[in-house]
Image (tube, rainbow, N blue to C red; front, side, top):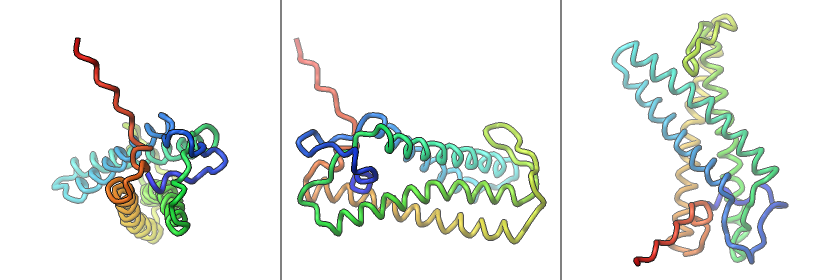
Length: 199
């Protein structure tokens, strides 16, 4: 997809090769998307909870998904830096679009790292134990309402920024597919196996 093509230029694949990301990169990309959907679904469920048990459960799920997103994002960055096969951008893509693609990608990665950290900071600054992956994290610091409020505000703002960048990312991919009719979108989608011939 447009904003996911330019993080590591030295490893870009020559334009004569098929425009495809490697399978691990694609798997991490779509896994991240599923985790993000789970995070927003659990955040919505928490905000609409009608009892404490439901709220605590959805918040525990939300925290665990956030830590998973953070870990997967680090894995993605490591893989891209060391092993990923990254197709070059289309040769006729204007410079301004290339810069926009870079800005979108860097912004997405930054938010995918910041968002879970600010959420975890909220839990810590509340000054009480909390569940994570089915285990209880003990109280690690005294309660600090002011810090909790700051981290909550950052967490909420970065969530909306993340939604905005994801929407731009998806719209750019669709623009390439249906308007420019190039293969940017296909570069991040798994190949379909050819149909078996009827005997």
